[in-house]
Image 1 (cartoon, rainbow over the protein chains, first blue to last red):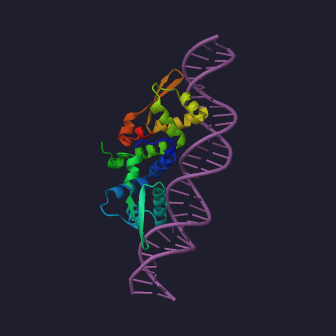
Image 2 (cartoon, rainbow over the protein chains, first blue to last red):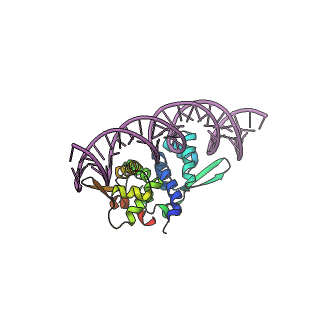
Image 3 (cartoon, chains in turn yellow, green, orange, cyan):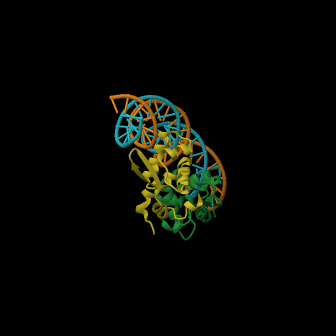
Length: 95
Length: 95
DNA sequence: TTGTTTGTTTTATAGTCATAAAACATTAGA
DNA sequence: TCTAATGTTTTATGACTATAAAACAAACAA
């Protein structure tokens, strides 16, 4: 699908979201994981604080690169592959 | 070609370079231009100052997204398509 | 009701980013 | 030598980013 300049704002959000080592690691982890991890799992895997993990996941969520499902107090995270296919085709396989 | 975590620093440079409206416009202009423009042409097309144009082109150059050839006092800019193919396959066609 | 787990928000801090304005530097023509 | 064109660097400024630490909040088990 061809994007236009009207998508530039979303495109910038996507690039901003991925212009950080921690968030790239989060995406890589989500890509390699078979089952969907919890928010705390992701932060723990990266060795960062809960509040820091929450901060970075919020940025990825705002950029629509991940989807989050809540079950009680727990939130499960999955990659939003359609967004990657649309804005960064082929990118995930380079991780 | 599959990239590894060792390429993460370069990957972050690439994403940082593209996480800005002005630099995305520069890349779009370079992609659509048949002949290679001068530094000043690019800045003028975007309506930004010479020093600002120099600043943004430096970031794109540092990220190896553009190649710059100097002829006397004039510098000509071209896209480094190999870098786009490696780090952002398919991205240029979405512009 | 209390305690635990999961997750978010707030505040403070240090560092980075994008721009303007001014100055600097190279090249080349007159 | 002087002027003009092209491009870079420096300084200052306001806005933004990433983190730590502390506090807050919802859900749920005991």
